[in-house]
Length: 369
Ligand code: MUC
Ligand code: MG
Image (tube, rainbow, N blue to C red):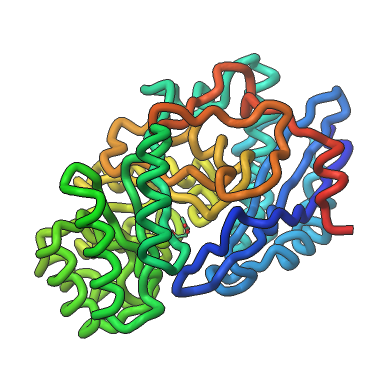
């Protein structure tokens, strides 16, 4: 049934250093999985994370080891195409490991969609749009470089909304940096910030007030992952959108955040949710609670990015747009035909499965030996 399950760590330098409060990335390590069936289908999935162990609890190396040691032998014993039944066995036998589970589920869905000759979006409920809006993240660490980068993106019609990475400098310095960019780009351009959980609640009270007054549109993950009480107090106090990112780790945390009114927007990430289907559950919880949706990324390459785009194309509410720009941050293309970014959006492929074709020679060159 499942003939081989291959895992690859693919190292690709970034186009410039990407500076976040949790890590500075110069290279991204893509964690890719390739499942081949005995009847000749090939499915791809991705379990990429950020900054080694700087962002999440799973590293590229631990994800690969756990797939090779635990997931792959188990998968090879299964004799069904039914993804719900396969995921039930994997979940029953393996705790945690959301990223690995996401990658495997993505590859299985890719295969199933190819079998049915449908784009993946149609297996996830059906697309409501042919493309999704994509913002760009300014994270060079230098205000004037960030302004020039944003102006270029607007001019070439690739991005017209920007997220700024802050939290590694004192609050006042970060606020000054953000407001200088906001002023340079003008009122029509939406600016959001991602603090990556760097602020105490007192820092957040000061920082959010200044950013709200300066016309910033959204504050992402201001405080620690577990500090849901602070997120709740901040959401109640300010008019500006407060978005949960790292605190949102799948349907049960989505339920907890929604129940406590701890965020007005959810950054839905397929890997953080533990799979595409679980990310869809997160979106349902948000819809029921009146929480807006944002399509998040773990700075994946084209596989995780396009899998996410298929899912986000099915969301009725995608009010905060997406940040599916991961492949654009990388210096090497691993697809035979690159993903299509134009007019500020990413097109969702119309061909079957994920709708992409990997360049196997490129992967062989770039993979960690
Ligand atoms: C994050 O925390 O949002 C997403 C975009 C980006 O630049 O970093 C990631 C992680
Ligand atoms: Mg974030």
